[in-house]
Length: 152
Image (cartoon, rainbow, N blue to C red):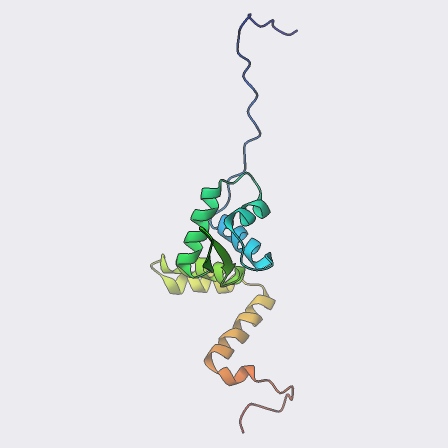
């Protein structure tokens, strides 16, 4: 049974469904992904419209400015505002976050050892290959011949 309202009483609207809090770095990744999908340099309003979620324009500007400071985006003057474009992709941003986590730990060797032991066999193979390429840049010059060791 409903209770009658007193004359002149205010109706309090029910609160909207609470928004899920974004994970650390998630908004930066979404902004960078939107820029990577853009047809060229775009304004902050374009980025905000692509991300959705009711973000304030100032939130997008702050995020873009932080990405600029990290070297992940570039900007050029467009009228009274800026047009933004990606200078790096999402993998660059993820690598930056990984480096920051590692830099924040006192025992880097233990962190890296734990990371490596948790990798899947495919990821471990990939990492070993990337490390080998970083040690010997000639390793990336694959001729397709298994007998070719890169020596001339």
